[in-house]
Amino acid sequence: MFAQTVLRPRCAKWLIATGLLLMLSGCVDKPSTLERIKEDGVLRVVTRNSPATYFQDRNGETGFEYELVKRFADDMGVELKIETADNLDEIFARLGQPSGPVLAAAGLVDSEKRKQEVRFSHPYLEVTPQVIYRNGQPRPTDAADLIGKRIMVLKGSTHAEQLAELKKQHPDLQYEESDAVEVVDLLRMVDEGQIDLTLVDSNEVAMNQVYFPNVRVAFDWGDARDQRWAVAAGEDNSLLNEINAYIDKSKQNGSLQRLKDRYYGHVDVLGYVGAYTFAQHLQQRLPRYEKHFQTYAKEEQVDWRLLAAIGYQESMWQASVTSKTGVRGLMMLTQNTAQAMGVANRLDPKQSIKGGAKYFAYVKEQLDKDIQEPDRTWFALAAYNVGSGHLEDARKLAQNEGLSPNKWLDVKKMLPRLSQKQWYSKTRYGYARGGEPVHFVANIRRYYDILTWVTQPQLEGSQVADGNLHVPGVDKTKPAEQAPAL
Ligand code: BLG
Image 1 (cartoon, rainbow, N blue to C red):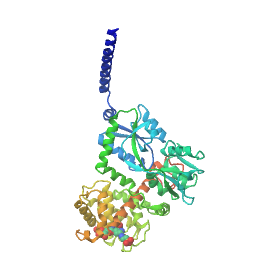
Image 2: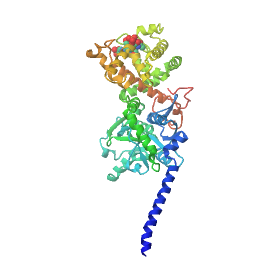
Image 3: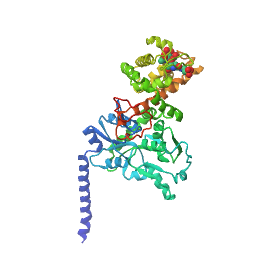
Image 4: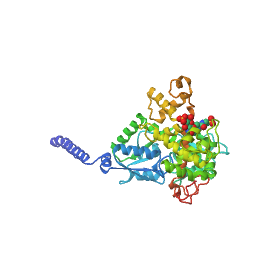
């Protein structure tokens, strides 16, 4: 009896120790998720196909999530393999599969419910849920105004969770969750009056507003939330730690901010009226000049949509405009520039576009070699508008302030100083209307984004093929190559 009571715990301890050892050795043998990724040389990521996350344009894959996750993969030295899921539930389902993707980068915000299914990374983007209504309808001002309305949201979204919460207090609230639509569809349905309201995150609203002129934000519903990447709950910590370190590093070195600036920094510049007007001009004016943009862009190895965006900013695609300062034509060439580029008649749209393309390529070529893309393009645009000399002055001001002369985000802060005496009196080229190139670049980036989105081959595909992108004149029945979708 005595012997037994003494021996049993000892025996148990031994067994536990051996078991632990065995388990530990098992852990050592089994590679971690991160080791597995590095060994395979591939990072498999699941996302959604939308302008705010991932889409294809003629240059290949693009989108905010895509670029961020591509940089992460590059940082790890592995290849990125993207797959798209049709809806949110499918994203979470795929993450759980044994041989499925290891990471979801899809504009996801965390919620208590989701935390039971997946593990979330550190945040990288703050967004606010917004209630969207149609212009001309009474504007809802709080959650109680949602009752009695036709509402649709993405199935499995945090917005659906918000509505489910509200329904507990207001059982008469009706809403539909759909897994057959994307955010662009929801916005179109509000725009066309097929539903009264939807709930969408602020970044997606801002990016898509231009396609849906009747869409308005009713109110922000709830606090700002953070978008995060998600990994399967069953994974070890290795991948999540690597992701978090990468996100933290991107915040510290400013690269995340620059990416946000590129995708979202210019989204509000057009406003409702500008957005509506642009959509009309896409249909009415661009077709006249599209061929010329394509021809001369190709000659100068510039993206034709960027050239078209410059043309829109300059003249709204009108051939015979003259500015207060005597600058003329579709691409608004000064007399000097026209002469230098061999343009005899600035009011001839063909010549103007050709000269503009040549000049843009020229100023870009002249830029400091240390300025990398995409900033290089923004700098070239600024030089097109304000001149290379003044741009150099702004770069020097940036350097003096301890900012980077090679980052657009920094130099654009300095440009407005060129119109203040205390600053321009000390610069080499003196006074310039330095605020103008800042707006110039922001607007062109917005037009360029829109042109990129509406001319992507994917628009011919299933996701938006049912007429859900409200851009007048977009003929979705023809392949993009033969009839660019404008
Ligand atoms: C640009 C020239 C640059 C020139 C700058 O002015 O014109 N760009 C072109 O001709 C394409 O070459 O630089 S410089 O040669 O180094 O001096 C500075 O002079 C044109 C700008 C001026 C601007 N639009 C293209 O962006 C313009 O017209 N501003 C006036 C607007 S408003 O009428 O007063 O509202």
